[in-house]
Amino acid sequence: MDDHADLFKALGDGTRRLILDGLAEKDGQTLFEICGRLTMRHNLASSRQAISQHLAVLEQAGLVRSRRQGRYKFHHIDTSRLRSIVERWPIDREEPEL
Amino acid sequence: MRINITSVYVDDQAMALAFYTDKLGFTKKTDEPAGGARWLTVVSPAEPDGTELLLEPEGHPAARTYKEALVADGIPFTQFAVDDVHAEVERLKGLGVEFTQDATDFGPVVTAVLDDTCGNLIQLATMK
Image (cartoon, rainbow over all chains, first blue to last red):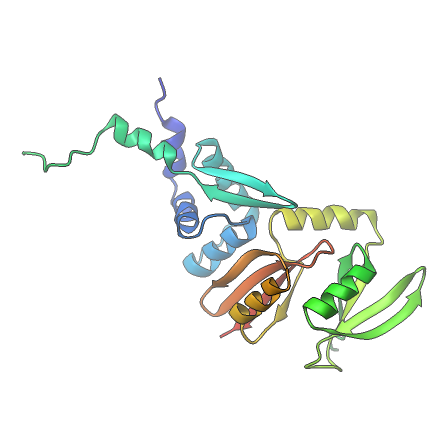
């Protein structure tokens, strides 16, 4: 059974959530652009190497996919795995009766 | 002390000269034979006596490895100032120039990153 452990671990870090925010805003970014956004918009001082490792965790969890285009590498967000969360705990359309 | 020259390693000097003049709009300043290659520099027409950009051949085997690693991660080799990044991106795209990062607002600065076709990425910047 898939316990989604890697998914929740990937989402359990603030920097990784900011990376996903950035890719949701503009999909398909190089490592340089991802780092630029984190530094300039969120004043985050992580090294490129650290961000690279965060991307590897996100990629392992299936939330980010990297694509080689010619000599460049672009990163894309993939939210399809998040569906498994609401399938596991469905969101009721009606307000729950308490 | 002042900075009179800076350089980019290019894989082909003739191609580099064409790109940096025809596309980016720099003008040729010096072109002298030097050790089997050329001492080849361009300047901005806005500052003909300003800092020269040396289009330097990749003389060292490590240069290519270094450049490829930078390009893969989208890291620019150097940066040029423009009055309006958005307009410049549009102009250059019209000339077939490829960008790895479109004009992006970073608060005090707007930047974009282009491919110089000689193995480097170049950042364009407009300070607000």
